[in-house]
View 1 (tube, rainbow, N blue to C red):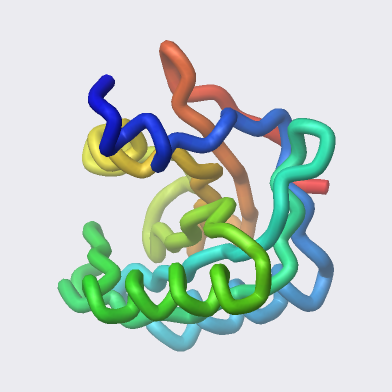
View 2: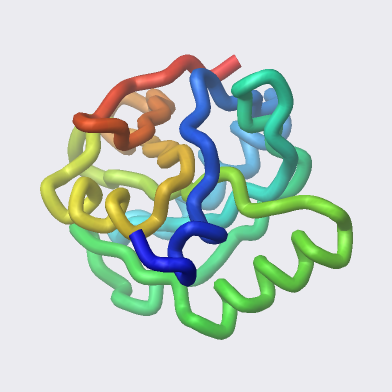
Length: 144
């Protein structure tokens, strides 16, 4: 790992804390964006090996696709700036799977390698949220 990435990596978390209102905001966003995937940045703090979400930034899926998502560089930069301004960090990435289970796709797995955050996925089929981190393999972690 080179020096650029050393400072970008966060310690992998054992759980993520999302409030009921944050879950409702993300669920509503996913349903409004259907049939396309929705996405968001999750800002907060790391406490006792747990990602604690304090702020949700709903973002646009610039791909407008039901099977892929991309957050624009501009919205990503705004997320980092908002986090820094409020003494937080990006602790998670959210997206939906409108017509499939809340499990990482092969594309998700590829991007989890370069975005080492908690990945929260919402299933439009089951209305279920699940969270994952990439260690040597993908590991599901609890949402508390």
